[in-house]
Image 1 (tube, one colour):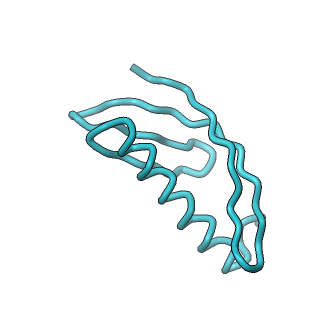
Image 2 (cartoon, rainbow, N blue to C red):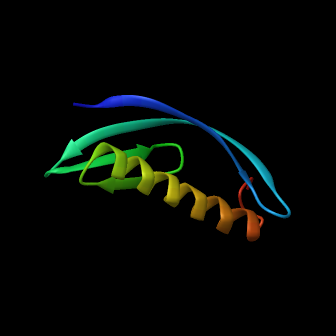
Length: 75
């Protein structure tokens, strides 16, 4: 079953402060749980809902770290 979620948070480092507000979809397929952001085309997954959410949060943190470092986030 597909669940719609919302993620609100902040990414901060020495040079950047980014507010994040995203609509997410959570679903299960082939025995795994997935959390997906259509806006950014990012996915986290795991054996449990909690693992999938944690995986997604790590994925978005790396995405924001990379794009803010490369100065491509707002392009």
